[in-house]
Length: 276
Image (cartoon, rainbow, N blue to C red):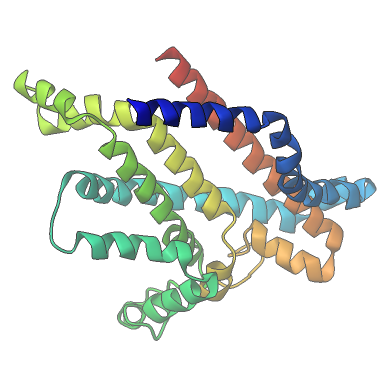
């Protein structure tokens, strides 16, 4: 008891010495570091040329291509990532650590390495690309290559989030539903997914956001062809060399889209948690 009492007194003394009012000033440098570059985008933009830039066909094509390809990449990540995440969450098997590490790799690999790896696999002389080329199927430097590059770097974000979401679902609830006669498919659709939904939604948003900002792997594997493979990040890169105002406008559009989507999703998640 004396040890516990001594520990309690020590904790109260530490709490008294701790000053919460210092948290704000201590956090300010990082907040400013994150905020100032974003403000600089807005302040540097020449607003008089915004409309002419927005009506530029290159801008419209880059925006539409980014929206279509990122949605496709996110859909593929959900379609093929969900079974993988569920298996990692529910099964313990030999080699699981290797598979988990393999999923982590695209998140830490330099984008250029990812692009070269995809080119060596699916390029015209690649491991799988060469046989496909003989059949008249070309993947590299096409919109399919854009989707594959985005999926390669973004899918792990969904798999990791979905695995955590499925792990967080209480197995007793699933077992109770099975006792009541529910099939595995019904348990997954009516019990597991709804309970893991907030985490799954966060994973979907992170996957889409990562795909939207993908640059390095795309430019190597798909190229930077206006109207064909030029996504918004690639158009920003080209605009930085030729038209800075175009690059600034596209950067602001990307910033606005990402901010709005993240804000809406976070608000929806808070509302759902609050209702529950």
